[in-house]
Image 1 (cartoon, rainbow, N blue to C red):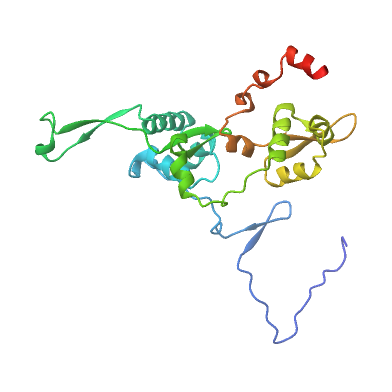
Image 2 (image 1 turned 90 degrees about the vertical axis):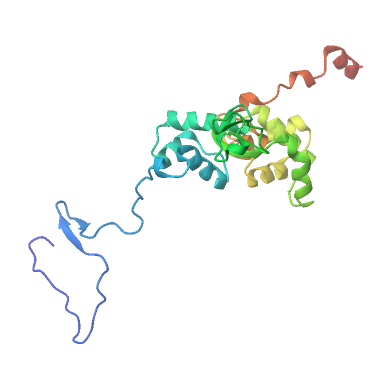
Length: 256
């Protein structure tokens, strides 16, 4: 209490107390501040990409090679300490190179294989088996669609868990009507979708985003992971469903 005697606790003779690994000093306001430098968790100083073999382009390749999801230009800029504009330009250049849209001249040390006598051999860049794409607001490597047969031959049968037809139909309804409640999806499909919706949420394709202001029901929408799996950058890239809807004549046949 204020103004009362100060009582100090004493330890029994022979007892010892382990010293703290960190030392503190009193600061104004009763805050205790460490006198020691920050531990191993201190943020690492950014690496100068110009000192790395291949520079910025190679650094971007190294990061995207290990990324398990699309990486945004902002995150790449932050990690590499390079302006976003430079990161974007380097990514566009890499994409053009992988697509075979850029050509390069390779220096040749042996004059015997020189084509023009100047130690240069012109060589057009052919498309790679992979491509760099913008998906879900970020960049990521993907194998090209043309090589799907060889990729499928490599992947063991049953290694990839596929969605059931019911799950695909439910996912399509949510994708085009989001945000939407489970009751609304059930009404559209004509069946109960509770179990299917739980599966899609568990697999990260759908998420609870809001509540209906009138009924209080949970509303669901697709996730960035959904866009990544479909290879889309935004929901605006979803294919139009109007060409697949029945025409007026067909509706009259159904009524008859």
